[in-house]
Length: 312
Image 1: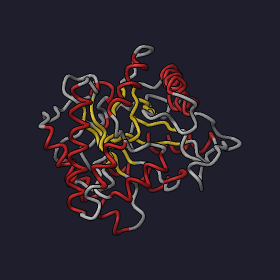
Image 2: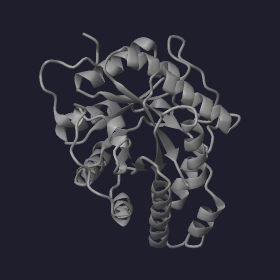
Image 3: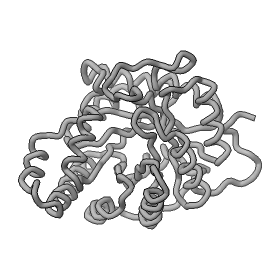
Image 4: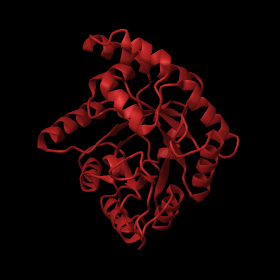
């Protein structure tokens, strides 16, 4: 039996829902992203956030790898637990970092055993220095499109990929990024999720350029800023520039943590409203394992509650 082949037993509804189908629905798709906890205390914070966000019935949730591909074991464990203990549909992260093809197959097998059928296939950042040169594992894969092919060949999996509205740090230009996404789609990817977006025009340019070449829905990543130093550091690591208009609004209240948070929620709400008005298929909230700011933005948008639907 292939790794992702359905068994004869009826699987829980949360792990049979189709992410592409939810992205194609008339109502915007809402999803949340978490990162794996480092210790028991942070795991308790994570699960409190998961349970609070579960109440708004997001279409799916994902758990990232740590920088440079670290925390793989925790990522897999938390994703498995989400599949088994919640009503949420998990999107499992998988990267090529420090992994042979045999190891990648093993991780996919772990996800399959937990019933997880949706995987976000990423090349990943170089370990140790996320802006350093990429070196593939000698028995591994060099590109995300190769990982997409591997996962699709292992069974009944839906595969998503990453997109970079502000151009991937290693890419020469937007046209190259578009070509990469087209190749990922040809390899079997059926949707994409972006890095965090702070410039709606950048997202729309990428979306429209890809749409002219292939049918790959691209959901923008959205992160409400609650800590200016943290977001500046993340922006540097990810190669995602903060637009001057956003920086000036945050710097104007730099000495007031509560005001920074309020401005961050305002900025995220404005971006969400603009991108949804322009036809974005949904929003992927980068939660930083906290729920309050995300729920505030979600509440500001007055979105319809998700209906329960399965892949059939």
